[in-house]
Image 1 (cartoon, helix red, strand yellow):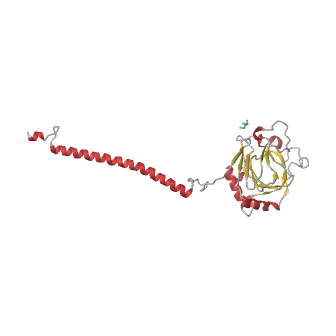
Image 2 (cartoon, helix red, strand yellow):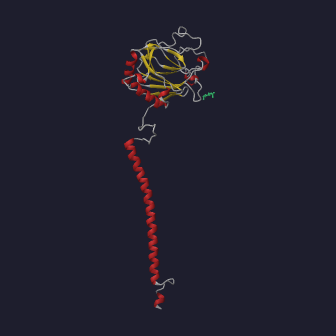
Amino acid sequence: MKYKANRVLGVKPKRRLQIIFFLCICFLLVFWFECRIFSQGLNRKGSRHKFLEKFREEEGDTLWHGESGESSVNSISFQVLSWRPRALYFPNFVTAKQCQSIIEIAKSNLKPSGLALRKGETAESTKGIRTSSGTFISASDDSTGVLDIVERKIARATMIPRSHGEAFNVLRYEIGQRYVAHYDAFNPAEYGQRSSQRIASFLVYLSDVEEGGETMFPYENGANMGVGYDYKRCIGLKVKPRQGDGLLFYSLFPNGTIDKTSLHGSCPVIKGEKWVATKWINDQEM
Ligand SMILES: *[C@@H]1O[C@H](CO)[C@@H](O)[C@H](O)[C@H]1NC(C)=O
């Protein structure tokens, strides 16, 4: 009777202990597994977070870079001045000191600026179109290294390799001097086939100009087109030169045809003097 009373659900006491023990082990195992999975999840998240934070503190937002890449993050500010033509403005692209240095190098070699002539044009017939003085300097000819720095920065900002750039054309415009509206790209119908085409132009203003001397885009956003625009007139989008600032505009559409709205010129200087360095960027290596 006693023996029978000790049986629960028909299981002997000794067997009962074994079952309880077994269940306890199972429970512990499940608990242990859960804990492991949970803590791993936390750890992974935690350490990844910590790693990123540490990385950001030490390296800025730098990513691992390719062999041809750079290890630092650069910030180059810009303002979109226009989509037609595609024109970008870069405030403080170079320092005042760098501007001064470029002017010093150019000063001793200034000659009246030339023009690429269309079929049938002569130096005499194009007199007055471009009245500035200038000189070509390649970065390798500048022992101060300033043009090298500027050229690298232009290549970074445009993501077009330096090898596609012509030598810097450093220009001085004195009072009354100008460059009437023109295209930097060469229209094959007017100039014949050439081995390379200019894609874009990067201007670096080396001086402030007290009055006048703006870079003008008379056809900006399609204005003044097809109404007999007089190429000497200073109208449309005007960019006032400011020492150290850069101006980039594209002469070609992405499909390689000439963007007619990239017509531009330099308004006559009214007061002061204008110094500018131009880098023409081509579709071919130079
Ligand atoms: C080239 O692109 C421009 C602008 O997107 C477009 O107006 C023009 O028709 C295109 N020309 C050709 C030949 O595809």
